[in-house]
Image (cartoon, rainbow, N blue to C red; front, top):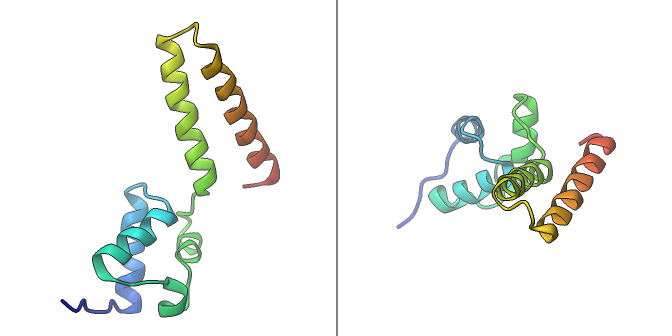
Length: 106
């Protein structure tokens, strides 16, 4: 089955809609490739997905989002399991990485 190629406007609209749902640029690329067979956005549409998101003030650094999600899960786990010291150490490391990203301006 041959999939129709999205136009530039449709592609940007789809990217913005997915970003408003809370998906990162990495996952947006995977979703569009799976559903529409877009492949590399830069080659097909002359714009990166993150570039489109930055133009619309929707860009979230994927590294920062992943670290915050992991830290929230670890905090939830520690609230139930207070004596889990290895997890406490992992949480400290995750928070240090997050502070480092913020310090670098991401």
